[in-house]
Length: 564
Image 1 (cartoon, rainbow, N blue to C red):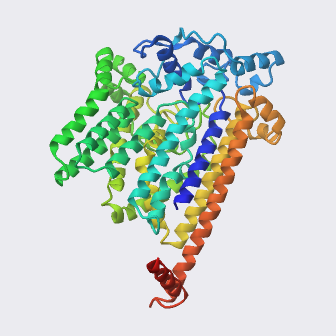
Image 2: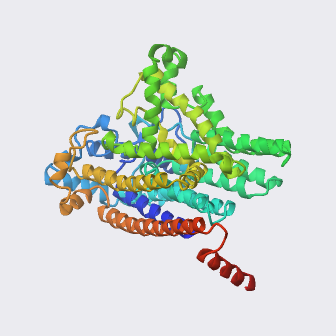
Image 3: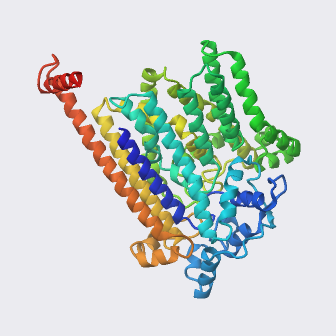
């Protein structure tokens, strides 16, 4: 199972890098705001504050491409219009995106406010040296570097989660599924790729979650160094993004339980809290002084000007809107897409929903057998606190706008995709579900079929998006025209020529092919192993007394091991 996990990790790395190289400029969610944050630090040495603007070059590229970039609300043209435009326009766009920039961008402010300035600075400060290294590169090349580093952090979180599971569970038997679970996450829940293979701070949140899980699970709990290290990690997580706080609450509650069991002293817990506060507290104090709001998102500031949360809910709250919020958050977790919001038909997402329900039910049935492992105890606490935390932005959106439809702000503005940031802590859900389902032949078959569908969906939905980016299959904002796509989906020369204006299509194709081959070999090996385990179970059932061919093989192996 360790080797299978390694191959799964390699496949997710290759497929994630394919997303990185195949996206047009700023097509990832909120990328130009994240990019502008990094650029402001690099050019001015200051962090964005309330009222600061996007950097001019980030806005110029968006507007000069006339809708080819993000923010469809500003677009007057779509991808299809770009690739039917005059050849001189296409040449000019290619020059703006793919040509080296000498001199580099000045980084002067534009007229549009940066809507991501509420985020803490740690992620952006870490990427500032990479920005300065690549500031004379082409825009596409620089974004590929920044996105690649961002995705690599997320991928490392899965690697670390596999390592922690391997230290916690035996490689044989049910423990094998627990070890492979983090590596399976991107294929069980393919929304991982559009969420993590972009420029965004969620990837660093995932890595810091994995580091905290590793310390809690593997480090000696009685040592002061363990508590101080955990305080530093959690402080850096809070200094990366406010979405880290549900996980921080889960860790704190688990540590209090360890103190109640007298595994450690209350003074160590206070040291943990003081360290985390020293690392991240200054940022939140400064933001609350500047804005009067602790978590000062643009929506919360707008709501403050309109009278506050209670007044907004009294005006817009409805049971219908609340009922919509739950599936909206779930759908955004399963597949959020990119900033063009070109999503597959809802019927295509139905098997992903079935997989989510099957995994959830199997996890609930099997949790009891694993409840004593600290790695497993973190999972329900994280899920519970996340559910409480995510209710706040949902209520804010509801208070401002009432019920939003898909496409207005993703799936109704309800960011369920943040759940991928906690994959290292939530991966035991998959492992427990697999071990539970494996006891039933029908459920096991359904799980394999659904996993195969999810992988096919990943490649199909990604290809659909790239058809859209190439101007083939576009029918206006958030609309995919199957008839238009059928005319050119197999015209590889046209597709690659068009995408080469904005991205690196051949790199994306080769990386995708390599990832698909690795994934196929891995799944084939898993099926062979599963078949051998099934046959072994039949032999055991046929010879309950311990006699028979299987017993002879095991006895010979035991004798050989004893001699060794």
